[in-house]
Length: 260
Ligand SMILES: Nc1ncnc2c1ncn2[C@@H]1O[C@H](COP(=O)(O)OP(=O)(O)OP(=O)(O)O)[C@@H](O)[C@H]1O
Image (cartoon, rainbow, N blue to C red):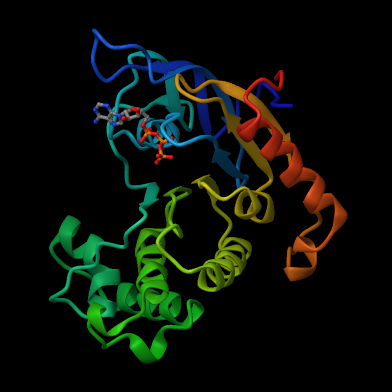
């Protein structure tokens, strides 16, 4: 279970949100502490408010109820130490891959240094993209573009990484591979991750804990500890415990009468 912890990197306390003051809440009574370098996934039925939750942590959306804090400070706007990866990489089509990775620095400071370029090259190497660094985005596959989106979010070395269905546009094989790539990056450059996904197996494969949300208005049905050993691999997927955990979550999502 979640432990009250002053040192939580991300903290949601009794959070609720309604987009329209006349309309019902889309999420309510959300409590969650995410600790340093923890990987927490959020799953739940379509429309239950997963993206709303992530947007509130990012500072793109201010909740109508409750408190969201990052590093013990209320979230009032987006911040540099929180990186975001969306479903689509949204690369700039007129910049090559390396320049796309460096774009956040160029945008923020108007320039980047040789050291920044070196770091971009290191990240590109880590993501297996060195030979594509000078290519334009439309010369890359969807999976490669998404990798570029991830390392672009890592360039500013954020302590927290928010990922909103980052792999959902990819085919199943690429999706599994990029999941393992993400785990490798996370091992080498530990980050606190909040990861939204529709895929129960992806959530179990990647995360330390999984927040299971009810259908709208989204509330917390369960917070599940994923007690599978790391590093995770394709063997993990075939383990009996993996099947138990995915079945448990499926029960919540497909049989809404299962008590919390
Ligand atoms: N900007 C907005 N204005 C009004 N309503 C919105 C807005 N964004 C989302 N909603 C509504 O809030 C609810 C939750 O949306 P949200 O995108 O957070 O859910 P989700 O769980 O991420 O959905 P999905 O799994 O389908 O991506 C939905 O009913 C959606 O229609």
